[in-house]
Image 1: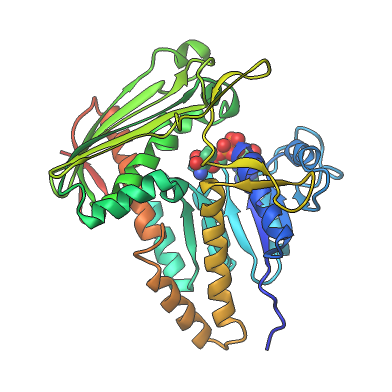
Image 2: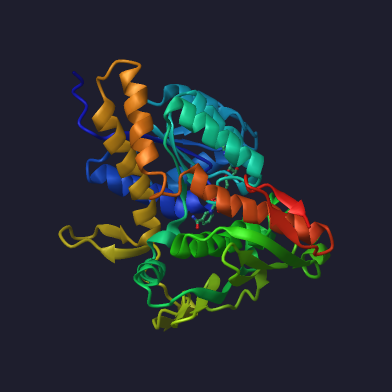
Length: 404
Ligand SMILES: NC(=O)c1ccc[n+]([C@@H]2O[C@H](COP(=O)([O-])OP(=O)(O)OC[C@H]3O[C@@H](n4cnc5c(N)ncnc54)[C@H](O)[C@@H]3O)[C@@H](O)[C@H]2O)c1
């Protein structure tokens, strides 16, 4: 019988914005709480590893590629495979590469028998979502997509009240999510042409509607504009909008952009309105009625719910991270631990059968691939519609999109 105490080694693949701002602080805090052991970080460039060392000078982690033996400026997109080979027993892989580069890392992790927590969207193509789903089911691997808005109480409450009947039957809704121009111009300068404001952030609200109502999309029409970014040498959409009809005939309009003014009062404008036969939900997910006006930051809307720093209750000078960005990743880590605790020490084929059974029981409760498929299908259909002159796109029974 194993002596394992339930702490999990974690490999984070992709060392960019979300890793630096959310995933690493979460994983380091979980380690402090005794729930995570070794931390490995794999990115493409050694400079990224160096930057992370500067950001977290007191945290121990293994970096790939190793800056000591890799030339500055070199790019090693396969370095994560070395890290995967070093990941200890019970290790989980957190995938935080750009949107279009999730699938190869997920498939590699599944092949190595590792559970996965992936940043949203799971992937950009329906075929890839089916491939991931099939491979994960066959090998009894848990693959969770970090749709953290599901953990925002402002959205969770809509789900609860919808199921309690407060809203009645859905009629229509409107979601808006728009980010500052620094995203495509600076932070995602290398990959904004492979994604869009819809695929990157709009998908949150496609998933939220599915999460709240359980409804699946039937068809959609989408629009995109290229006016600002092409003037900055980017063949990318400034803004993308979609009108999605769901299986019950209700309609959700999602408006997205990533060229908002750099003077915007938060990185992200966002909110959701829903109308049903019995009532309305309305939430501004940016303006939580809390702002700062400071010499340092000017006027800022401040969302205390997402992922923010607070004084630790017990230790002076220690920061505690709290919020739905944290809770979402931890839900994945906790699931992985629970599955491993129930199966550690079992011989094959019992171990595989027990894992498959436990993961199947989570199928309707978590954004496993069969649920993350919805966001991926909407994303692929939106791109198809925009690139076909805004024609309607329908979904078949496996959610492959087709021009109507
Ligand atoms: N959960 C959320 O709400 C949320 C928020 C922001 C971003 N994201 C998602 O997280 C992912 C990453 O976003 P980001 O903001 O960190 O982007 P980013 O561009 O800042 O970082 C991506 C990193 O991945 C690295 N990378 C690329 N190919 C790689 C490979 N083969 N191996 C290892 N590393 C590789 C890049 O070099 C870069 O450091 C995206 O899918 C994005 O949509 C999710």
